[in-house]
Length: 283
Ligand code: HPA
Image (cartoon, rainbow, N blue to C red; front, side):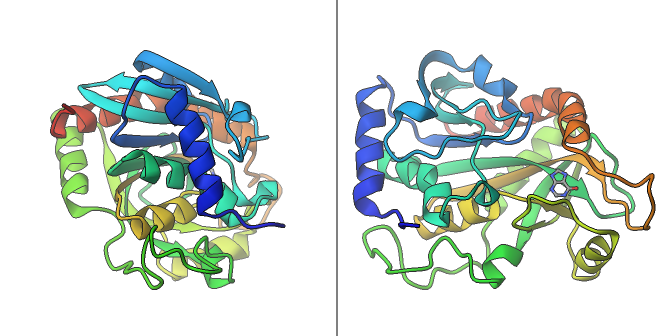
């Protein structure tokens, strides 16, 4: 599998620049079943992922595969309706190529969303969780998106990860949630490679390790974004509660994830619109 590097990122970025009137400064990645906000972008330039050179096209239901660039709550945003995951078979450098394109286009803030399984006993399906920090289980196994030669023009060899999720942005999100009566938990997101869901023993292990929610995305994008100097906000939609007991009635399904996504979407939209509105307006 060939890795993707600056030349690929630049080719993709130059294609996207040629297809939009806008200069986005905010990036937004909408995860499984959470893509509806893209429809609310105004003066949109819409680009199907398949047309952008090297851009990974998602094969998963619930991921439309469209880039919407336009205006939202006073911001100029580049909104990804759907993403690609490592389990779809791409190298990490391709999974995270969209973040590099955002970086090259001048995006300074990225908001990452995902569907996740709740691990903490007080969590409920349908709830939102602000990501306070992450555990990079895939990366610990070696699949870090920064593996390979480092391009100093994109970021440092050994980037700091002591504060991946921006404290200022998190404070804004908490305030918006409070003002709008949106229940918002906060916790640690652990990323696994997937695509199989976890066993009850996996889940007990993840909980013991300190994780509050589990999913199959977001962390590689957050790492690349931090490497590139972008500010990151992460929000999980808790689509199901992890079942830690063994038994036939404890199945998790993708249908369940998409179904609960429908409950989460209005809350997520309210939260994200509120956050965008609270950020300094684009000129
Ligand atoms: N596990 C992993 N990924 C997920 C889950 C889960 O329970 N729910 C949504 N994405």
